[in-house]
Length: 139
Image 1 (cartoon, one colour):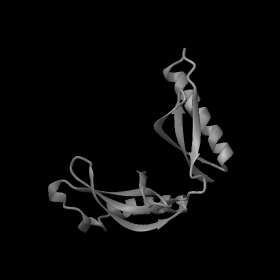
Image 2 (tube, one colour):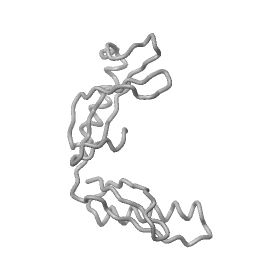
Image 3 (cartoon, rainbow, N blue to C red):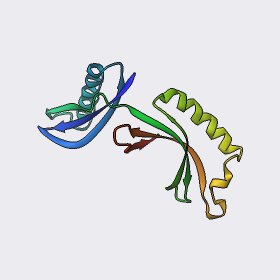
């Protein structure tokens, strides 16, 4: 399985919409993306026939996942992150994320946060583009 990133167009113009689809191959991912958009458009505009399309961006690009400890302020905003490990194997890191969450609950990483200021800790997976190391999202 691989994650493909698609740009979305509506009414013949690119709308800056992005969609990440995980599938066996690019063709299957494109079909899933098209179906997803069709379903959403029918839900929102049931009587309109809106032209839409998707285009795969960098189909050979691999996403890289970093397991991090996020420090959150009292409002839930991330103010710092400390990488624990990284890999392009998402499933392994998701299992490690659960273990890291348990360790955080046990207080093993309390030195990262100032609890007097209302800070909290959370185990996150960051998803990066391997070509630019741009942070795409936090899971």
